Length: 424
Image 1 (cartoon, rainbow, N blue to C red):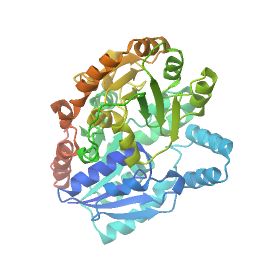
Image 2 (tube, one colour):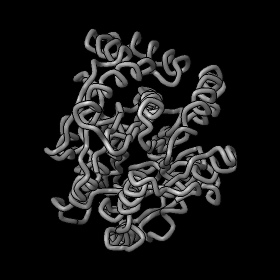
Image 3 (tube, rainbow, N blue to C red):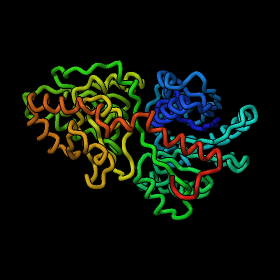
Image 4 (cartoon, rainbow, N blue to C red):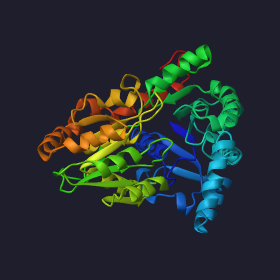
């Protein structure tokens, strides 16, 4: 089976969707799938070369020029113009449809036509983050009639409808989504909640669909032998964070005001809002470290060496943060800070079977009370519970080898025109 895949979120571009796609490519290549990847050149400020280690040598990679948005952001960052980068990034996010990389579909389509002539594929595959990949794949589908699978991961236009300041982009994306996705032979989501929502919203217009969660690679965690956490106890948040989506200020306030004899240190690993540093300074919290963006390899190390892993939940009832699976695979205690009702939260539903997880609302008072009353004896018992997470069957079926089995089967049926009209 030969797959032509279009996506801007491929190594070395540093984002969560890149990791998801790289996992798939490696797992499916082991099953004999051949890949040609259509993506773009990545500026140094957005690159993580360690992600390239996830891609097998057999995979051919074809690159267009860097999208205009990324060239502009890279130039502003290299010039030290943080305010200009902030302003441009926020305006582009609110106005450009389908997203800030608008227009890349034209470059991707031109290159894909050339590659398609040299290496005719059996299947087209497109993947977010940028929905420009789906626009290009839809055009190829019209031209070639090849089966097309689209990994949306998260909802498309719904993300924009959640915020009042992106209504103009939401209107455009709703039109693009309705014009594009019905052409797909298979839609791929990260949760059953998204799948059900689209089936209810679109009715008979929704293509067949498959849920493939984010998952993890066991090989990433093998180099790190489990050891008890040292004191002061390191609370680690790994990943991007902002006041809008994953607000860490309640945790910072709780740490600054908790009356505990148990020594804590907060570590924020990844891109984080400057508002968090300001809050820590104003509260006099000195036991805090901001690492800035780190590589994928370094993020795994930080996860495995944490005392307690901080996981901030989503505000949407459709998504599960990808790092949830990585946190569980590390065997470290998880403090899940939820931002919605537990009964509606898919992340909490995933985490409930795991004893080494504590669930707290994202409120300063609740977090302060938890930290104030946490003793070393209680923590050590919690730590031993979390140590068993990697061995629990509730987690092991999310490892990439078993996780991608249904995906491979769906692709196999697609290439033989056997995919029925109902959901997989």
